[in-house]
Image: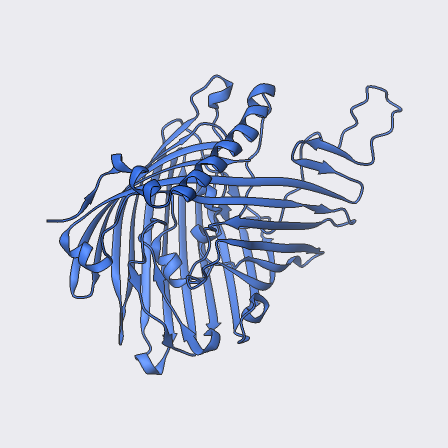
Length: 456
């Protein structure tokens, strides 16, 4: 007999075991909802969801810079608070944004799955709490900056050895270089993978495909030069990073490059193609690949274990097709490892997803960076409408078995429902059917997930 933790029991077992964490998570979620949602509902104020994934920040297009006096000769204030979370000054501007996510997850397992990963119990979790300060320094060519601190950060990637739950996940300064592009300096996402570059709050499903966390790190510290080409249908990025800037003893270098293009770019139809490559030295002469089954509360399903290696090379291929309310994406990621001790293993994986926006909205495309942004409902719940509704499906495959490495093969088929009540509030439900081939067994796990997300 398999072990079954019902979805309806979610919250009670977890809170009995980790009640303090649950109460803190629920408290933060309720405080954030009350403190951020109420002022907007009361005033009928429109908001724009911040794009946390971008290093470069777009110029504000609001009326913040306009004089509020009705006199034609009145002087505009040199500095002022534009809103509760915005400041406009003579030398710089500032916007404070954030994300709060609360998750629940339940499972059903067969006997082989229990043998492989142990008994999985339903759990409630504060998935992510993030605060971001971003803006511009008002030079003749404005410099952009972004600083993000978060609890239970999304983007750990292959950096799964860290036990830190509070961390500075992003700190970057972007400097425009006339006729060349933009130079980013600091800690930010390396330019590889369409889904990795998409902000965690704007993903199609609750978690990124397992293969991305298994094979790629998330944010790195270093330099990146990027720009558009051919009047924005194309983007290119080249980055150099070094682990010594992140506190490692060994100065391991990483070089990443990405090119994207829009072969089809019409008002109702868009085709995105991308290719990226990555070469990275192994920090301290070792590599580790592992990932959870697209559920943050679950343990790692695939795990190569730490092993000796000198470097790795990655190739990522991207495709996205958007026609009206239909949105399809796919990626293939290959990883070649230089490890004589383990027979130079080769790992790879892919995902393909498709979604249909039942209410007709479309995901906006960031032409400066080559990825998709946040859904904005045409008829928000708090303005007399019902928000936006989306249904989605995805299949992912991750293979960490090759040569002397037996990290496992994991596949998952997922269905999702997304309700975007407003630009700020999102409710989502995910179901997943996962198969894990590892430790001489083939285990089956059903995943039941839900999330309440608030962005400000």
